[in-house]
Length: 451
Image (tube, rainbow, N blue to C red):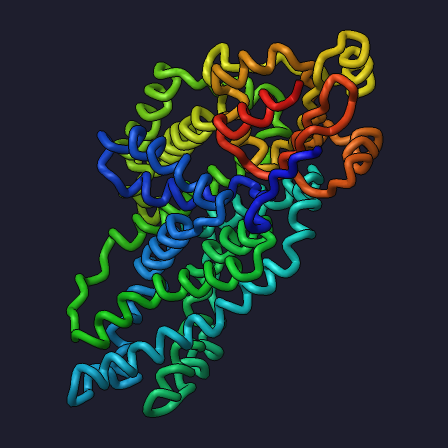
């Protein structure tokens, strides 16, 4: 009997996007804790997504929303906006809280449909990410957004439109809701880049519920400071250079994202990544040195040539270090590899003549769950040992490796998405199909059952 292992929700088509929320927190943490904390967070994050437990992912999205509220085109308008919808002029705290809540729900009313739309068209993202042209296009887009974060140019709405939007609404809960809706538009120059990231990632999940919920949670994070000021009359610190630091953090994250999307298209890049303590230490050192040089706290505006060069070098080192840490997390430990054939027909024939079971692994560089299987399951020493009695063949559908012949093999298993691992017994019959991430223990059970 064929054993079918399926995901509890349709979240198995990750493109690695969650990694870009982690560096946001990473770059804000004390340097001494960065490398270790990154490693501690990444695995639970991916596991949460692939098991259907989205709590950790949503917490990071919430933090991304809070981080966006600290950017120069959002933070300075918080106190003024709260005064406009009247939360500070209320007689009771409950009334102020109701007005503030209505304002935040107005922000959410703009963003949540975007998440629903991206998720509903999510199937397009998974297929599109197999195209080198799409990957290069995304990379160029993220580089452009990063340039705007570093101040190369400003993304802004026309001043006349912003003034008209600011006059929208009126008194009461309705006015606060409408003002929240239009404030989200006014803040577009700083929310746009983050939304670009988030919507691309949400699109790869294909989960409509998670798509809408993630953008709703992002809106709550963006509106948190508005809510606190309006409800409790909190006085916020004055604007300063630290607002530009937030933009630099997002800029670094976007450059890393641009490289990540095309990593499989750059010859030799993935071969540089190693899962060793020395490599991790070097990557962490580059990140710390880049931050110390001024990747975040220095500015390109009104600075001397020496300062601009120093910040540029700091950004390069911070990006190199962060990308190195990501590469470390994706690389397999030394010696923790199964021996894979590449010719499917030859592997099937060898399994038939030798009387051995056959394991067929379909994967791609854009498939996050496939990478998770590589890093956490196929690298497990117990799985490697058990795999020695199998004939193992890997069919790579990464950009540049995808061919019509390989797609025909995938179609022969009546499967469209990835990942897919198929276990055949020595007679050639299918014993198990795996269509989501499974931990090493579960993989061992399935492999040992094939006799």
